[in-house]
Amino acid sequence: MGLIYTEIQITNLLAPEMEPYVTKALVDTGALHLCIPQHISFQLKLKQLEEREVTLADGSKKLVPYVGPVKITFKNRNCFTGAMVFGEDVLLGAIPMEDMDLVIQPALLKVTVNPQSPNIPMSVAK
Image (cartoon, rainbow, N blue to C red; front, side):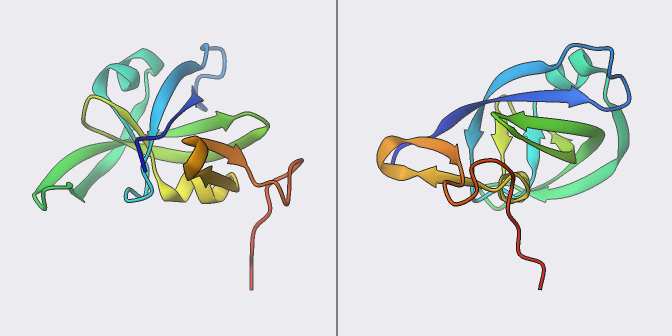
């Protein structure tokens, strides 16, 4: 399977008058959270809420800013979360993908809304 990128919008919930930042995100099911580069945090004037320790792909650990709150929009789906600030690419991790009820179509190298719930996100709470 190749790399999968998808377009998302990121909005600063504390500054709704600001335009959303539209970007291509690497879909990374090995990552849990939304990760954004510093320049996007600056563009959206996101507030640092705390620091978080992350384990990178090479096994090393790093302390990074955790900013937010942000709204992520993909097609007719939204979720509300924070973002870890590091790296050069936007990573869309498993937690926001699950929250928006998105599925990966590996053969097509794309992300779509869950076809079993095309109008609103579905979740399991039991």
